[in-house]
Image (cartoon, rainbow, N blue to C red; front, top):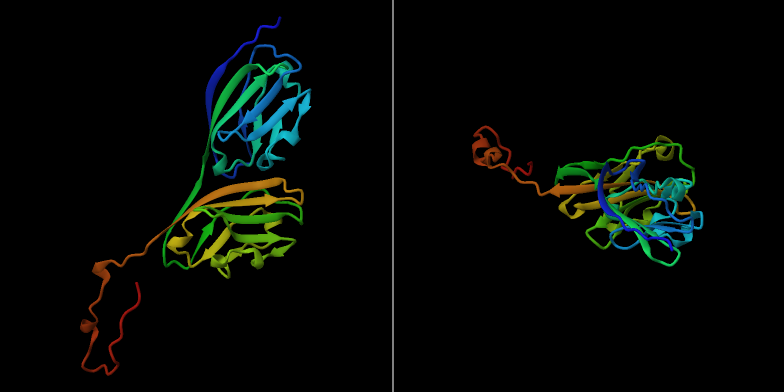
Length: 260
């Protein structure tokens, strides 16, 4: 009879949003049975990765993680159950657990990795001409790749800008962003997916996610940017009494000063 064992430990990993990949470490010195099943899940119980019967099981992954994960070969022999997560984003932060099960379904070991994805924060005042949501990474992507900027929070999620089939897709934009966004030229070659948002207002405040996908919906690049647009206020010390501007020699009628 095989003796089952259970190990629970917690480890913390911190990365910046937009990095190429992050490794969630999980190692054991205890020999695991060759028919063991390895599962990685997130805090919401979504299936990140499954390994069983000597190979990965992508059909058991949640759609959000397809094409984003990798595990090492011969992991049950080496005891290195670490998971590589490509292009981690802000919404993927939290507790990620690695669990190993026997053929009978008994849990043999478990490890929790706390993933902290530091978001990129941009802050401007309402009234500026434009603001840039930065995203610069490695280029040389396929010409048919899709670049999708979405505002994830506050809900509902809306499309801020969509680039597909070699051109922008204004018909797919949310109406509040029409004629207000610009992207860089040759973005797939240069890897500069930064988005310029014109005339930002407090209503534009929120969490934005840029995802780059191939035609199979595989994530090629991903980054989260949190935008805060503050209300613009006028400094009382800069307020000019227009009566002091009047001159007996100036016949021009007095006008309100609308500048800030």
